[in-house]
Length: 165
Image 1 (cartoon, rainbow, N blue to C red):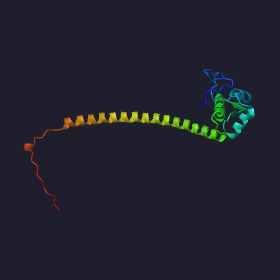
Image 2 (cartoon, helix red, strand yellow):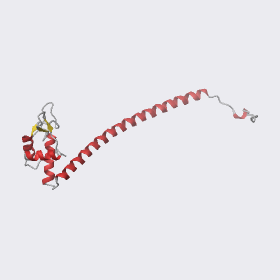
Image 3 (tube, rainbow, N blue to C red):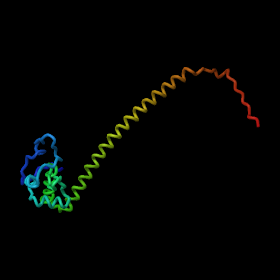
């Protein structure tokens, strides 16, 4: 959701947008943009970014000296915060809750995918074990058939004796 293009107020073309590539060793989560560049890319004022950071809407990386560094994902999130606020009329508390819920959804989807993968692997193991058990049972049954001796019932005689106390 946060890869959405802005409404034209912010410059575009930073890595991760419209097919632009990242340099080697950098991805959309690498904090590389200083606050002034991030503000320009997001179409916001630097003070607004500081406020969003303070409120926990966006959590940029930090340099050893404490300076903020924003990733391409952070900038996309800033744009989404701005869109929700300006176009949808959602207040910052609502936006924070939306972001938290979307993060939960993302985590749950990843968990579902992982559990689905584990379930499929377990089903394959069960199917393999079932096939092996069927083969083993068939082999045992084949061996029984060779050991059986036919008995003619009309000539067989059984004598029952009650147990003695």
